[in-house]
Length: 425
Image 1 (tube, one colour):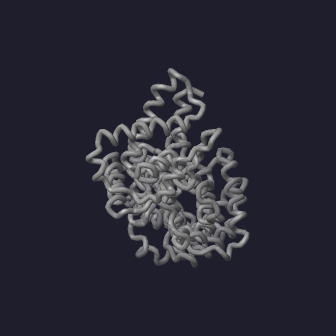
Image 2 (cartoon, helix red, strand yellow; image 1 turned 90 degrees about the vertical axis):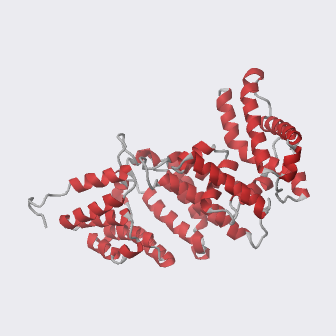
Image 3 (cartoon, helix red, strand yellow; image 1 turned 120 degrees about the vertical axis):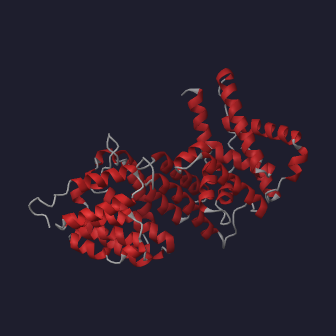
């Protein structure tokens, strides 16, 4: 492995842990982040000439501390004016511990604190997601902007506002108390799922999906599960993400077109991720009646995704079971999006007219949804009503902001029979 590749791996694996230690010690996000970035920059210069240190994390931590001290000296007056994070003395003490022989940084507590800092309820969800990707995973501002399909300036402003609010509100650098913990873990999970969704189903632009964004969100959940084990919401969220992400290599054709689920090459699905996800769900669903709220929703979504993922070929898909699971999810959530997905499953199990019946009443709930119009168009085609399908496709095309999806809808519409063709109705 080259030095640059090795350093990139260390960045991915150690950034959040090292930053947590520095924040705990210096109580300033800006100082900690800048010092750690300087340390990695120094490593990129020094390691190729002097060789990789035996303990890269300890080397980087030492270098970052030196740079932090240098900056504190240079800006002593300004530093005294900076708002401080609330850090218990015991936290600082723990944050400075290094395991004797291996030099492995003992950071699980501090990393958990950093995660909760980023996902505090006082921060807007989009800011919390950007901040978590930046601080916990070390993703660059430019990459976050690309993942969220927005400008670098917008992401930088969100992160800056979030950091300022942390200081202004006095958000503590600590794990919440036991009564608060379940709700706050769910907040962390929602932030991660927001980041995943931005990559799995790009709402606009020229890309159908952005696998790198989805992958970073999965990495965030893995980090949180490692430092906060035993929370079922994180288990089912990871399972759902893995099942959806496992199809990433088969969703887009060589020319950038959409490949529908039933037409995907299942040999390109990542079976190791599917197996991991199914095992996670099996553990959680031993007692499904004990799952509540959003955790229960995620578990049902995961069970649906597992039905798709474990079907050897599309024809083996158990649509009756999927329709049943969607009915339970519909009862639990009352979500119009769930009803829309349920209609697709019911159409597969019981025919297109049964699916169309479930779409009744959704226009008011989803007035600007191109997916509703697209599903209606597809079911009308299957029901032998091409003239109505053409109108529905026109509505879907007008509403769709994603270029690849829009092209797919246009192709589907162009394949419809013309009014002069036999069978036109």
